[in-house]
Image 1 (tube, rainbow, N blue to C red):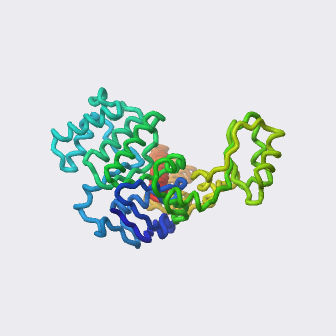
Image 2 (image 1 turned 180 degrees about the vertical axis):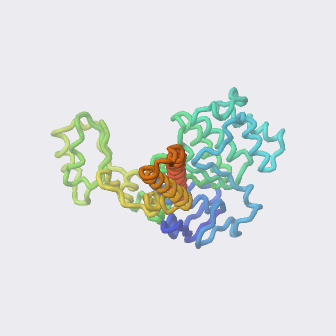
Image 3 (image 1 turned 135 degrees about the vertical axis):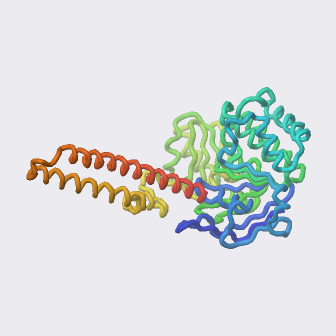
Length: 391
């Protein structure tokens, strides 16, 4: 269905995507996984022809993107894209009309999906009156109402409670059974592991791991142990034979060194914990993710990002609007000082003249502060947009 080969996208001095290749097949779910800012959203936007790759190719059934393909795609963006003042049903019907669905058919499909998501009683509610999770459900309905062949979902489980996550999971599996190709991006490894046939793990814009979920897990061996216990398991992380650990209150997943044996592990644990379950398993996708990507050091100072340089004060003062207001301020202030000095020597000079220039200086100063605030806000907004594109 979809094949992307060696995609690259650079924004200013930041390489958001560097050599990403992936393939989505009919009847399969592909998990596009990675930490926040890894390049997932930028990859999706290139696939959808929202932005153009600097290099690389994207084909649909062997053909490049064209307008005829657009209606074969369903897209759920991560950010909210609904008109907040619109009523729920009207919002759905509007987007359906953009896909060429007549009103009667669109209503029939909309009512079916609203009932599925327990939103039928809210069809006349305004979008802004819905919870974040319900808005997410509406956006999902819009993304699949036209029966697309390729469904691309950017963080689809965001804002959904556990019950609605199950509903969405069931729908994704139904789409797969219907022969649709599904791509969904997430940083929730448990969702990717349960749903995906294949995964693409992206980190810092590069593909670091890909393949079937089963194949990837087999590649990392069976040197993981799942424990259920009673007691304080905080010491587990420091054990010499533990290479990596995820420890909860009464549960832990340990990735072990190759040389340790089960009886040695149990001897080290049994004196401190009441072991209720001890099981050798394939590593979870979450533990593989941590091993490949690593855990960020929250105590260290973050490396400077190129785009953050725009926030330096020097760049603010280089803006033409700031320069213009600063020049006006200097002129008014200089004239005001000159008039006040002249008043000391020329008794006939009116205080009113000095007052006029003093007032002008104050007014110009406030105009300068407003311009500085506006320019700083604009730079902040552009930097946030840039950071969103790096995802």
